[in-house]
Length: 364
Image (cartoon, rainbow, N blue to C red):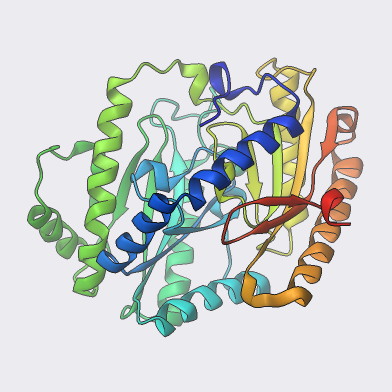
């Protein structure tokens, strides 16, 4: 994997870095053994897992749970704040759930919030900037979204639960239906599969047993990842917001790099306000000296294309990307004009089967 130097700062031209990183990530994703691992994992653990979460690039649950890339399906918005009433979010979520059910799979939705336990008041900019470092508000939004899912889909083959993501140790917290919690960081590394199942059944007595079994590898993977984080040496500055990229749209699973990009899905009618807030976060990074000025800021709109959508679908994705680019640039010019001298753009369509980013300049 391409590394960013100290604390997540990219030390080369941002577009050049993205081209290299995407090429590497696409090659890794399409490598035969990686494809076989995904197929095998799907057979062994068929539950489809959807993860609405914050735009913060640190929240890569595939890494945090040591799950093969492409298994967990993310949806991004500022602060992890979503509303099932918003038409586009409703549409993409329902499509994903129907896809799972039609494939004979159960579906589990993780509504989420995140925080840094070593920065409870947000003074060190390590928590959720989207909620102004207010963990209580972020948590309430995650619980509210869970209630929406449960009201619409019930608690059968589709089940929603709430997790907290603690970013200092990369650990997860599972919130039960009766107010109990399972803190993965506190578990004994030697805990067995059977013991985890017992704990999950106590948290979620109404959850389908098959879903419970499929959550076990995520918990075991997160517990293993937490141990690795505890054994590594990470400076506090590595845990702060130091983003240089604003990604808007879908198809950015390959982009997850700690403190590098803010990823915004257009999942509410206020999505441009999320772009504005992202711009202000990055300007704060510049003015505070957390990132250098010389490489600037990258605005990267994208759309996700699937082969079954055909050639018309591809052209629609191109139009979507151009729309996202124009709208995002407009709000940054009007609301964060100080960012414009630093701004570069790089827009394109992502092939869902390969994770290859095709820039508009190559498509036109």
